[in-house]
View 1 (cartoon, rainbow, N blue to C red):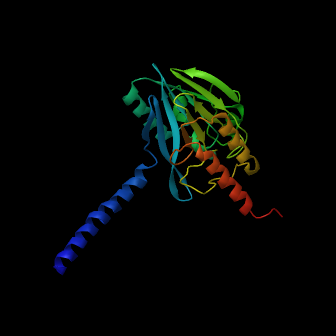
View 2: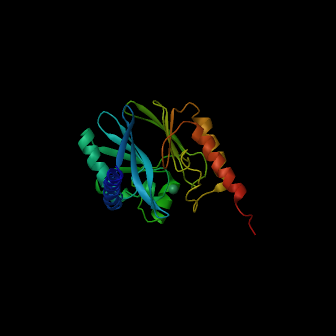
View 3: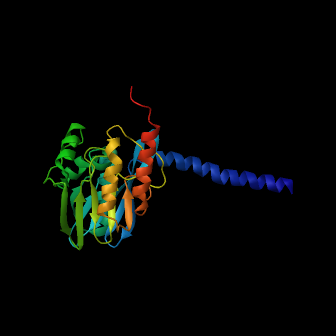
Length: 257
Ligand SMILES: [Zn+2]
């Protein structure tokens, strides 16, 4: 009997550990090329790509929105290769072109695919400030019209609103509202419930962040889904969750000398 248990244990160990080891190797090789897609509502998809941060592949969110004859994307995947993968997926899935991209701030996980988009003649829309920082950080210039800080427009059956609530994760972070099905693409201004960390704050304006999130909450109190920059989407509770993370960080921060 003991022998059987031992053999069984060995078999389980083999079955779990060997393929897991292979999977790990394969994952690290493909993570930076692949993009995943999750349907959120009729005509709205979340795209998930990965960015390296502190030695880990962190999932990053953007959206793809479908109209009758074209597609619009909120934020590029994290690099040009991933953006290529996304374009191939879009072509195969919808058989219609991606024509417009709105980037929500000038970091690699939002504008890292600009070169690929421009190679394909796809317009990248940002606020003037994001355009400026995108060039300064070496991602390239958004090529097309510049959105003012609060703009509403139609895209197919959707009403979209681009809103700048004030500084937070960066000085230029904007959010995108899809009126029906009431989705807010919060970008990196908003934190997932899965984290208690402020994340990368090298370009953040910590003292204004909470207030900017509050403004997003006031503008979109009826949101059914709030999509953070990284990790799982949630409801409007993510606004309060983000504010709590920022306030806690501010309290714990050593006083300036
Ligand atoms: Zn960022």
